[in-house]
Length: 267
Length: 361
Image (tube, rainbow over all chains, first blue to last red; front, side, top):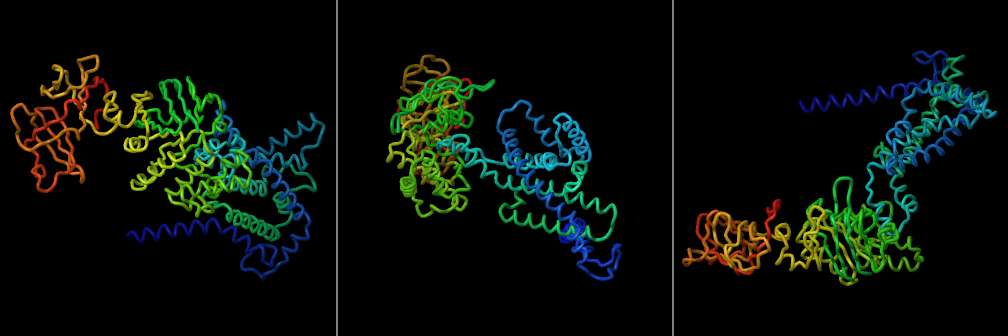
């Protein structure tokens, strides 16, 4: 009885993993199919879609733009989010609940809605400030910072809540001023949370489509937007090739991060 | 190293008073224990000395300096936390060096003092380990070294032994006391363990619900408890309610007369006789007329000690003595048998009765 139940759970686990990984595996396989219209069985295997992806410069450019945006947005959003999480956890702020809900807000609003709202806001701001905002890198980065903050606040808050305050008190007792306590003790203790927050922020920003869609300009699209535009005209496995590269990149980042911080312990 | 003075120290939260008013002077090199059940305000008091909690009223003086308004990092106290609070991302040596670094002690001097401090707690061979690689007792010693290396004016210990197992606890207790005496550190230790307090402290402060019940040496507290709470919290004690029949004779509520020559507190009605179990001598047999007789209700063998639960016509008493030898008739005493009791009438203390007492010992 116990054994059959064990078997049942094992197969359930295997089935759920299969279900989650199947699309990913399919994408990777399809990227090597020779025929343009996807069908089984493949007529043969080829690398031509990778070559095509490389030759169509919009993908390479989109890739670079995406990396840029994700890196800058993470570099801005993670420190901001960490500071916010610290303040929310430690300072006796009036309206703490409200601020916390506000910071997590972007997670609750559908990306397309937030994107449209931002687009309209940017247009207004452009006329007030007499300056381009939509279709600029800074406009895009600003929008993506909104994606990184909720993730950071969530992950860092979780770390802060599980943290024993007495090490910080010990540092103060040994003569450390509050900023020193933060830099020398609190931050190192929060490191796993902050690293995980940076990773997730980066991925969120890198693969974001909905929020980005209205905010990019010609010649400055991100990779997901470039892929979408390609899809409007062609349906060949080039996209699968691009996606495969993207999957490999994200996997590599996760593995590398996991070497430094056990992600399973943080999330 | 300095004296420590708590001057009418008080801490109120919205509705409740955590610490009612503590007056205490710890002399240079003295070890004072704050003793009491959980929630009695002892930890709050210690944290007010360290500066983690701001008192509502009163002052904290270290040496001659009023530090009540001084922030934690400028107070120069050395604190050992209950769960050690080591910096998990630093090595043992880095942990110990932290306080010196904050004091801008130059590197060569710092390394010398860290090595010295680690030698003091016999951990010099583990300087490069990370805290999580050490046992509980070793982590405790790192915490001690870290607090001591900065030459604190006052040494503060918050339940330092509560995370250690019983055997280690006795060992570390001795070690802390020896260190403290050797370095002449003015020390405040918080504990709920009366044995720990009695064996380590020069003086004890017994607290209950934010109030100081009594301050005194272990001997004073044990021999001369000020009230029923102290008598029951420090050591074991028989507490029998009754009245003073006439000088030298105490009448229990069930009517038994017990000898007692100690002085009665002002109010005669509502007294409690406090008598330590080991002061009661038990002899087998009925004794002579006029002797105090009791029936044995239970005998508890505790190894070195044996405890006798006795009934004196409705008044219960406990007596304890070192376990009698095999050929001693007392060894064969069983429940239901009769014993004769005696004690020095001066060793039975009279205390004012309390409305709410914790006379469960």
